[in-house]
Image (cartoon, rainbow, N blue to C red; front, side, top):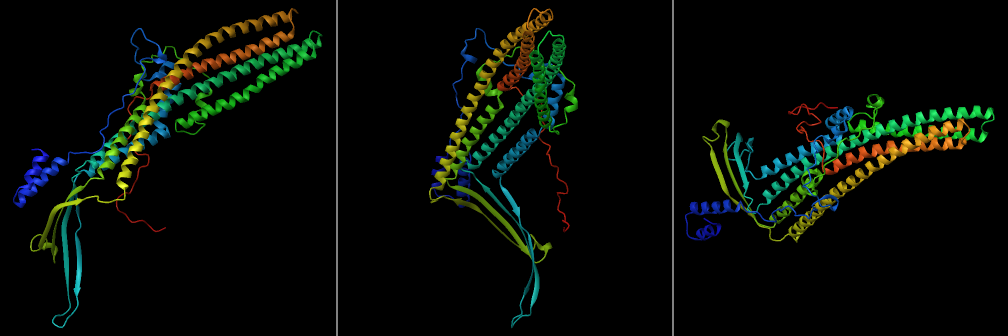
Length: 500
């Protein structure tokens, strides 16, 4: 039977019980009704390939699971595990998931009937009158009140829909936090190893330059060099030594940041990282897949899409407030002068019936609330599109940067080999008097600069490798327990608080 048929049938003469049954049946049908727009995932225009290149073969999907292990650094692997367990931003995201789940349960409860009881006990004394003496007696009452909002136009259902979408977004926010965390730990670790390498380079180069300066001074004494040569040799060594404190500052900052990312004190990792290690380098190329992959792989994009769904549901929630609402309410109560007489030798009363609330005039508030919800929905629609474009930009930039830095690294490696050979030859030629001492200093300065660039380019390869995996959506894909609260409350049962 359709709702229209029910409405026609309700117009015919019926007994009160039958008429009430028809009303309930109609309300039951309406209970499945909702107002407002139904959510549809936006259909965005996504390029078929990265960099606009036509691929001859289908692109391989990116291999993002534990991508950092391709750097082959056990220390880094362990730091990431510890960061996932101890990072405070991750703990905050877990708490937000627990909050979102609680809100969902709260909204689910709104769809169910409510039942409450309010028993009472009173001692009553009546005053004496001309015909009777003063008397005292007890009055006991017990009963239940029940109510159920039928949610005819789906306002509560839309609220539950919004809460569930918010919960899903909170889960994606946690994954996004983990993605950022893993990338940050890897980046700061690479950076720390870079500064360790630069410190060693500066110390080694300064030592060599000091030896050259000492040799120059002996040549000045022998009349084979000038005071200008000795001064320049000292200046070059001092300039290189001046780089060491700067590198140590940057190294300390990287190590301290790693400690905080792990949820520990800034100096917690100083002893563990004091032993130098090489800058980790990826040995394999990164498969990037196709641009459409980021719609599922990037947790920030997924979260933005879920929030759009959440605020689409809020439009329906606001729209439902403009329609009438019906609640079924009922109560039963009994009273007696003694507890034992309740429900036996006592008066019993009950009531049951619908309560209708019709918004007649609200000064345009309800329509304005719908407009507010629609404007918020539009903002989240734009935010979703923006997140997709930003994700694509991140990937495109990381692809270009990684590829070009690899090429730069190869050229710098050739440059370092050439400067190293030139420095050795210039020393030999200077000892034989075939070249001026200025050429020796220039060769040493050039070699030091080239070796600095080589370390920096090696670091850049690792950094852009990290950035590309982050851009593609690679993060921690292991199980995460979000059920444990950070603060464990005790003594929550009713208790007396001692006066302070």
